[in-house]
Length: 347
Image (tube, rainbow, N blue to C red; front, side, top):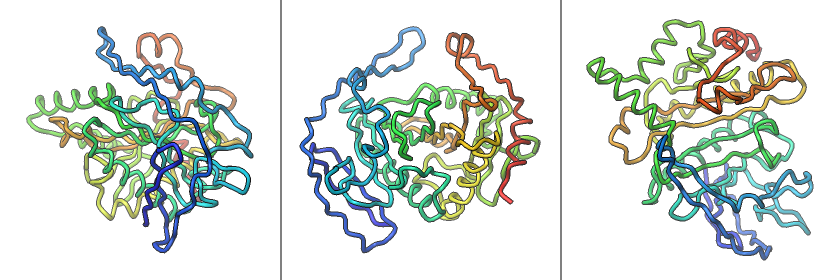
């Protein structure tokens, strides 16, 4: 992998990740955009203790442009985009409309491929490995920023999820705090550790799923994927490396090598769940340990992949119970979801 760091015309950082070590990236950004203006502010909910980001400038972000005006495609003669080169392998740049900025953190966009009409599932294993390398590299870099407490790499795919740009891409959020979801997991892990005299909750959870077997979807030498016992979403997968590590930079070479094959297989199964011609909308979310948390070593890196589609033509909406009381009601039994995900395995 070769990384080339440069800057866009407005000063934002851009990183190219290339498969070939002899690749040269020196195309200038020919645009003259207005300076980036952000209004990000983190406020704390006094009742729940949650951090809420107020980012009013995002009201003006690019919204469903036509394919020939996509800002994530490579630049072409007469049309400059966020990526000045006429082609790229993987590109990462600071978001022009970030939810988090300055002392409130940082947001980056990860473009998986120059092909506007592709998806992550269409990548080959070499390109998928390059995306993993980019996630890892950016996590390590952002960990060095004193204002960053946790890094979240994720992909939203599909209009049903709320995606405003159709080009295959993900994002990286660098939070200035430990997220509420992670705090809850760490609190649960600490409690389990006390009650059991030292057992790790993440290890115990994966071991229990492997022993039960009914919800295991894929079990390889270095990764285990299963539908959790108390799945929140109609089709939800959790993917863990067999050796517990706190974050992406800590993955060993064996897990890295096997990841592209495993992840691409899971994404392709998701697209086959409903037997529909259109791709399945999903969220793919890496959970990594906070950098300076006292219980960081107890956390287990894992990926959660889920869809809001519960049946052909039907979505799972976060209505009264979910939105009002944070109590999820799942219409699809996790065991049935796991069985379906095993049925649609690649032949």
